[in-house]
Length: 220
Image (tube, rainbow, N blue to C red):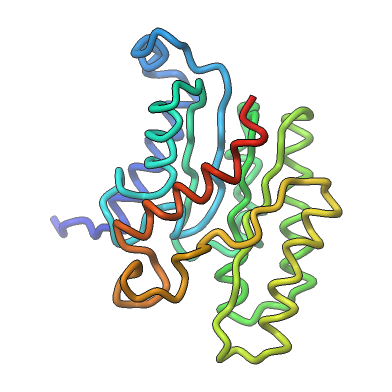
C-alpha cells in the first residue's frame, strides 16, 4: 500500500475531526474539562488552515485552540481546510460543512483564487455567498473575514485590487475584518517553508497568535 503524504494525512485528520464534532461520536470530549465547551469557532480555509507541510497539531487552528484553553475560554476550534481550495470550491463545500450551527465563522479563502488570476468579482461573489449561507444556518454567527495578499510579481493593479477585496466583503457583510491572515509571517523566509507560501512550525505559531488577538474582541 502506498504510504500517505503529509497532505493526505492532514486532510483525513480534518475530515475525521469534523465528523467527530458533527456526529458527536465522542461525547466524552465535552467532559474532559470542567468548563464545558459552549461556543464553537469554525475556520474555513485552504492549505494554510489545513496545516500543509507541518504536523497536524502544529497548524494554526490547533495552536489557537491551545491558546484559548490556556486562558480558560470555553471555545472549541474546528478547522476545515482543504489544500488547493478556491472560493468556488468553498461555496460548493459550505452546505455540507454547515450541518451544525457555529458561533464564530472565520472565512480564510481567496489565496488560491489570486494565485490563479481568477476574476476578482467572482472571488468577491463567492466569499459573500459562503458567508450568507453560513448566516442562513446560524443567524447569530459572527463572521470574520481573513484577508490575503498577493506577491508583487502579479502586477501592482491586481495585487492592490486583491487587497482591497477583503475590506469590501467585510463591509458588505458587516463582518469583522482580519486584514491579512499572514501578518508578520508572509514574505519572511525564516517563518515559511521552502515554497515561500506556507508557514513553517514557527510561522503557524505567529499566525495563531495573530488570529487570537484579532478574535479577542468578539470572544464573549
